[in-house]
Length: 400
Ligand code: SF4
Ligand code: SF4
Image 1 (cartoon, helix red, strand yellow):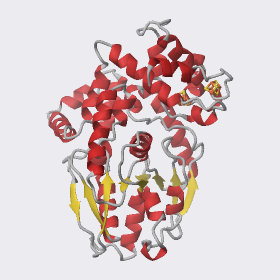
Image 2: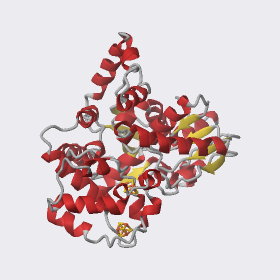
Image 3: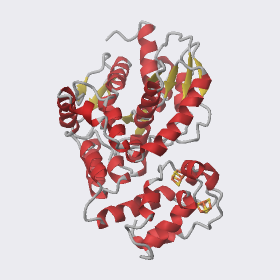
Image 4: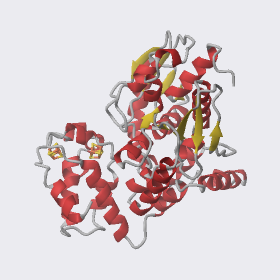
């Protein structure tokens, strides 16, 4: 988006304020500058050079979760998410020194480097230095370490080709994500085994693990485009029928940037569109589970696919329209606000009486796991497909 386009889009905001009540940061901070309307005014002032980039404006823009609840509420159809990304990009390119944490996150999500960082983290951890570091009075650093505890001891790379267990000749490409493919390896394995067991060979091309969202939302547009180009190339030369996504945020990014040259589909939607004879047979699960809907996807496909599990008592988590505070890297860059939102969600989860929290978002899952651990609760956090695969195996269908 050029600066001119940005101003044209921002001028569509008529300052009616109808978006204020749905904005999580306005709810918590009660300040106009932390509302969608106030942020649009700041973006306009920055674009017109009426405000200095080092003014308070950056702080208020950084506090935005990019949850886009305001977009859904806006009668004028202002594309708030695009405005925010464009404004952040121009701020990042104008800064001589990019913020350290943003640069670190940018490095973490680069293809092929995550395994190195995970190994380094565990070496430092074993040295005892982390125990000392945890005592530092730095909330962002503490949050980073708390989230890093969810990383696997031994990082794996599931890139490769997994043949179908049936001679159907069908093939799909699986998009596993960058951070998600590490912290949710059980999900990746469940998806591979389920798909190959249902008759679909699974291809996970190397070097395409990141969708670019982390880069784009932190203002690194060039790197985001590089990731998109890698996926365009891989999907253009693939003979697969679909590109299947596991995490909602990756799916949204790939869809909005029109990256895939293959038909793009979430794994829940893929299963829902299978003919009845191909649908996996599932064992009953007499347990209460709460579904959390991420900001990146509020459609009903997860609800529909989970309802295929006999006896599962599925409930909506209260205030499902409210962001949980994960919001990509937000849980690291704004730990105080992120924790406040996480605590609201945890209270709703406790009140639901659910034994399992289900979400198809990697970031939301990490946020819930952290909140649950801090509170000393024993509630599992699972992706819908982990449950589907588990019940498929329990029904004696999945044998791997
Ligand atoms: S973003 Fe939309 S809802 Fe919010 S103040 Fe502007 S026009 Fe009104
Ligand atoms: S994206 Fe979310 S946090 Fe940001 S202004 Fe809109 S509603 Fe508020």
